[in-house]
Length: 138
Image 1 (cartoon, rainbow, N blue to C red):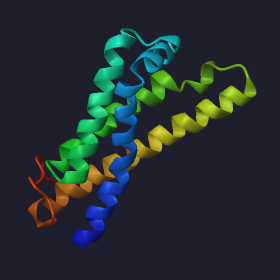
Image 2 (image 1 turned 90 degrees about the vertical axis):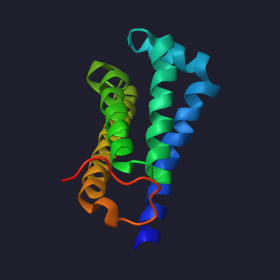
Image 3 (image 1 turned 180 degrees about the vertical axis):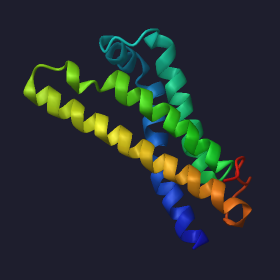
């Protein structure tokens, strides 16, 4: 089971690692996009959210306090869903449908990250293939 959980952690984290890297490699474009959504301090929020995404993804994948890493991902995903994908503000039907899909994707991933948090915190040190075990205990 340890190997399956490790593979699942790595596969789950790939999205956040790639997205986080994009926050830095495409910083100017992303800052403009974030600013167009009305997010304050877009120039600061893009690298900050990129760092949170990378850090949380690495913590889950590598197994360094993976429960805390999963919580970081929840803290990244929920505000992103609300601030960046407010489908209720869209008037164009295609844009509304696209933003609703992105909103629900972010919330679904937040739910998965929350479930991983609970899994890591309840399994504790019994979960193998970790560098540093969970911070929290459930």
